Image (tube, rainbow, N blue to C red; front, side, top):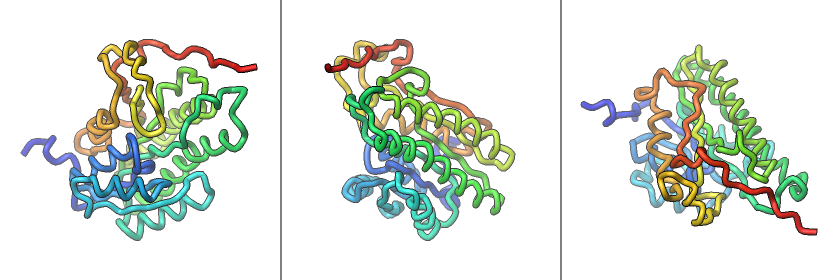
Length: 261
């Protein structure tokens, strides 16, 4: 049997995906259940989760969870629900992120928007990963975590709350990988480019800056995500960041923001 035909141990592996209601998180969650992995679909929108699960190949393997990860108690509630539904979580994907508005540049973003972006991306990502890792370490079980960062972890985006949150996540991946590695828990990052899904509304004209000639789609990320998550396919990979952008990072395409008044 080919190694690629069974990337997961479907009898033992379980997954939790945040932001699973739309965009990249949805594509990864659907791909996981498609591979036979029981998966928590976590999102702030009940309608999105319901639609994502209904459109999955194996909806019977999906467990829905609805909540706002910018709230301080939400992580504990999500973990309790995941534990009740699936037991120990072995694979964690953190894709949740609030919507972005071009008006939220350095002179426009308000305190609440700044805090919410960091709370969902960074705070929730850290607390969920640490709690899941703590349970795995106690059970002496391996795990694999994947954080969705951004090209703008290293390139300004005119959205300082977003770019700084993603930059912090990129370092968090390295910190967690270094700490958890001796316990058999791998932590990596997926770095999307211009993906026309989720919170990013892409201008079709952006395709001229992409060497592969088109905007990305959420499903372009799923095969790489599953490969990195798989303890069979990527057993010796941790603390790494995998760029999936069609070559867009070979250029810097954003101009400074237009400041009215």
